[in-house]
Length: 175
Image (cartoon, rainbow, N blue to C red):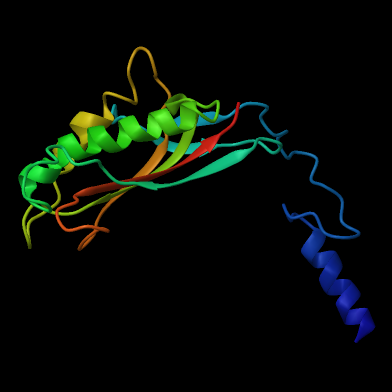
């Protein structure tokens, strides 16, 4: 049994990218990048990164999901007028997030991964992706802030309060 385990370990080490006890590191393995590296989408100008590589030694900050402030607090609570449309809510969320991370010494340019949760504006309706993008492109992919996070956007059935259409959570890498 011991002999078979040694042969299996030796076979596993050959050509493996995983460093194991007793195995040497492959000679052709690339050295890690010193800075965050953003991989652009292929054949697309859509304003997200295909992938973001964060090197070891960087501190990641996982920011909790943020929801909007009421657009018109004196309107009927939970109504579309109270919260505003998707663009209004996304602007509120991103503005609040920007202020929050700036208080921690970060900027929106330090965002590496974003998850956007969207609710359709009426029951059974599709999410307003275009409205969210109108807000998003004011914070990402601009001349002042060209860094693009990797991002997912998903439609969900509902959020914490009736009428909320947008929640966004972001992971940041401290420079």
